[in-house]
Length: 195
Image 1: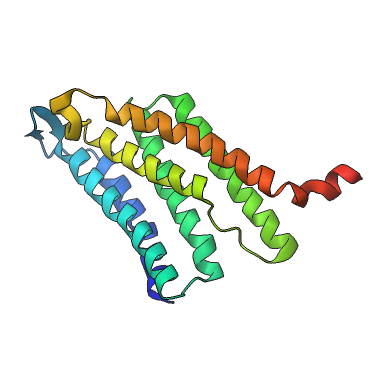
Image 2: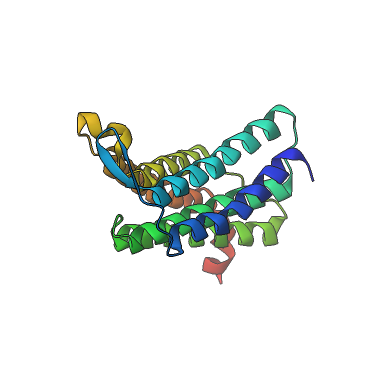
């Protein structure tokens, strides 16, 4: 178990902690930041989510720099990302901060791409690594989620709804990258259409 894989496991472990902080009936009060009020539980949740997201960046950097890319990492890293992001979006829907249709599209895409990855592994033994549109999707999703939990406080002074802007940018890349994965790997289904 190399360091990048350990960071991936840490990210998975942070998910239930993130859920407990946000979903247990805790009342830690409110904090004011840049003239905007934020529930302390949302602030703590955003910090946990940001820490988990940082492990995603670090494990990828370390794996590439030290040539520690493994099939476990190529499989578990995107799976951990999907678990973290889907958990956050479901919680944000419950908090009425994300439209349910946006979360549904994101969850359906993540499940479809995970299924595609499994089919590819079954057919040729290789794990499909994340492509650039997928990496952009993950980055914009994580930024949107942090801004949504922080009540867009980082941009409150300029009154720009950056949380919503990043949410719809991530939605675009969610759809685009999902289509791209299936187009790039369409040969995997060719035998099904030939029968």
